Image (cartoon, rainbow, N blue to C red; front, side, top):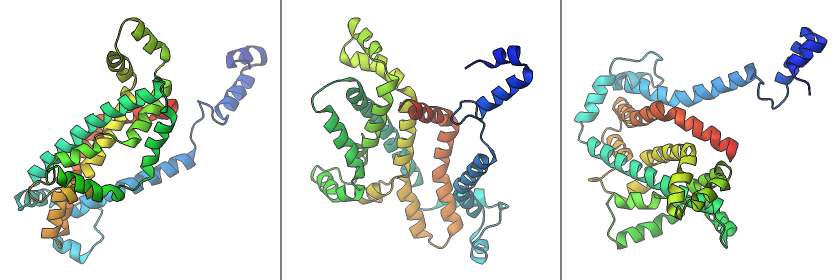
Length: 303
């Protein structure tokens, strides 16, 4: 197919503009611009996604009397947000301890999931061993099993080894995930050429050194995405921590639940606590959102 400059020289500028327009409108072309339907759908998705957070913010900035008179808040924020934050801190819930515990669990699980999932993904993607295919299928199949089915035996195991009520009982079961293994396998399958691995081995690098200096840099975008999503999942997890931990050693979602139990009618106070627990995640997205999007896009293209 002739290029646009060649068409302009041979057939004139009008033909060149028509050819360029046809190429832009070609389905699946790289220069195709989205139409108003795409922007409308994206706008609707954005509004639906932002509305719950906006609703929490509006209720958290209001007071209980106003909420009881009008459950649907005004779109104009009220001036009680800082006061409600102060009331949350002054309440008898262990907010600081829950924050520290959630931070410990989320950070340790994010690091461990990235390391172990990348190790497993590198093995499945670039190493050849007997049973590789069936084992990968088995790992992926575990994602179809509901988490609730394993709660009872997991609780029995944790009680038998003396971990009941301790943070380690929350951290260890989430140190590696089937989704993380699948994601890193799919990414490294195409993102890491065999030639780099062979070159490292020819230079005398061991298996672990090859993984650390060759595979890990190549997996950085996908690993960043996996770490962020693992952090969010760990930070918001409630079901298993609520079962295995006690009220004296809670995570942040458990603390917010205690706030709701103590002040079940004061929705302004409850929403202020929910907003406080959400602020760290918002800061994470603000500072790491670009890396997150890059990891998702590169994983989608390469996976």
